[in-house]
Length: 409
Image 1 (tube, rainbow, N blue to C red):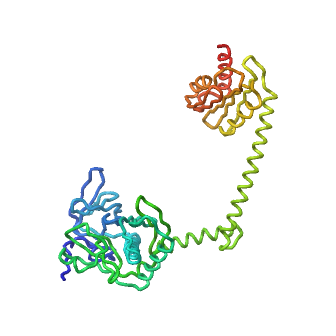
Image 2: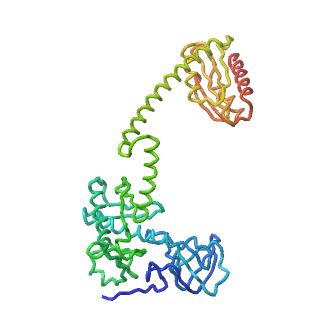
Image 3: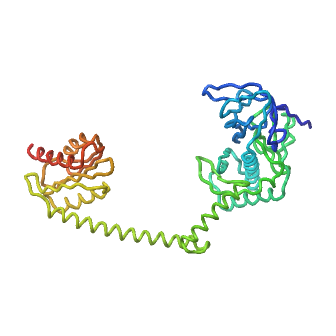
């Protein structure tokens, strides 16, 4: 079988470990969005494609912020245009590149493990900045299945098997047990883990599975008719372990409990908090009931009914609504207007008992005009809010005048 590589200008295929290179500038242009880009004779910068993000780095010290392949040319998008164009010295961000190599190879291994163990095909893949996902062509995944696939994947990593990249022709494909159907018919590149995984791929990969270091499944969820598995590989596993260990250490100190008792201790605290919140709600209801009686005792008797008006500061609208209902439940004659000053906003609640005939909805319409607000309600109970274009006192006085007008209608 012949090994063909027609893409000589793509140095990342010849050596994915190549960090620096020297070349010639072929073109420097601006695209439609006004972004400067350079086209080189050859490059080790990988362009976004095949689920793998682009490389970053520098050309002659100028930052490369994006790399794309457009109509067969690789565009290196630059922070600013290149000044020296005779000789180009390029350097990739190796930490980013090797992370992508670990993650992409890890995806191949985990996808092959799911297929090897259970026949679950991978139909989608995304390599993000924090974690990866694969979409499995199944509707349910169990804890045991996830563990078995993860165990097999890590066993393949531990065995430090070779990872081979090979250019082949369509006639040569029959020699390989491909994991999925290829999407191209020319420039076919296979990434192979012998006796385990044979897959068409244009990404960068390490030379051995051992360089992937580890694979850890984090979670999975239903995604339409598939299961989306979230996982990490390589140095990301250690980074996440260190972060989680730090958080666990902080929690053991805060909760004053050993690591193995954190869940039990946290549940006790949560249950205790719920009980305290219940007690607080009961006490708050008691205070509101007392406040309602106090307002009724100070109500002003008029032709409109027992008028209760008050300006509050930074009370919640829900609390004022509850207070209004308590008052109208105790007095059929009550007519009340509460105004709440909340930073740069004004809110109000208005309500009446059974006997007064004035409409709270009509009252609300007049008040909302003053504060360019929105609100709603009915003839018995309404509320609204808007900008503090007038003072709370002005809004209250206007409301009391409206109540008198509506009574005389």
